[in-house]
Amino acid sequence: MKVGIFDSGIGGLTVLKEMISTHPKAHYIYYGDTKNLPYGNKTKEELKICSDNIINFLIKKDVDLIIIACGTISSNIYEEIKDKYGVKIVDVINPTIDYIKKNNLTKVGILGTYMTVDSKVFENRLTDVKQVACPKFVPAIESGKSVDEYAKEYLEQLKTCENIVLGCTHYPLIIDTLKKYKNVNFINMGKCIAEIIDFNNEVDLQVDLYFSKVDENLKHNVKQIVGEFEIKEI
Ligand code: DGL
Picture 1 (cartoon, rainbow, N blue to C red):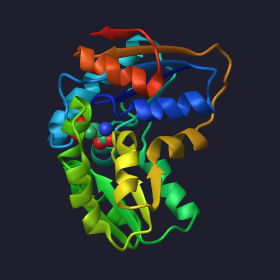
Picture 2: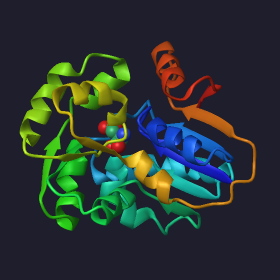
Picture 3: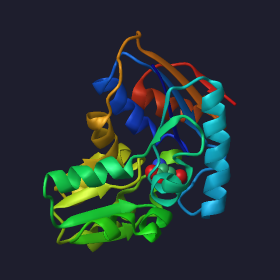
């Protein structure tokens, strides 16, 4: 089984990490579009162009399944692209909403990119939801800067929430900082999808990592998140 996973950068690695831990016997092909990040403020048309390039790249690599490991693409254009390519494509938002419903979670807060919040994907399908757009997080996470000040500012707006969705796949990378300011149940979308996805686990683990722009900082981040795998720039 070959599984393609993609995101704007290192965020989707949080999904890859959960997939490896739950489904270790698969061949994963990851693409991080570091040259074009952040995706969180792009228009739907721009998101379609970026995802089209990546999906075609993954299809050429012969993947059997593609996981959109990006909240922004999942919430804005998933319905439009899911049946377009002749390969099964799944997103990270639907499994997260299903998880919230299944567990009857209330007082739900959403931290997400500007475009994810603007799509109202959570608001439209759940009751008792409060959303906060966090545009300062992704650039800081990718460049390894402190997010303390921003975490405080954003979480201040979710005072009454008992469950908070990490609505962008980059945010599990700053979970320790988030917990410092609000110790509630944080929901990791990577975990939600890894738990429900089902496929034949039949090959030894293989992980191929591709990024559109690679530098030393990226190599360091990747190693911290998923360990030592070869990284190719393409
Ligand atoms: N990690 C992505 C998401 O889940 C993209 C964030 C960004 O590039 O702004 O939304």
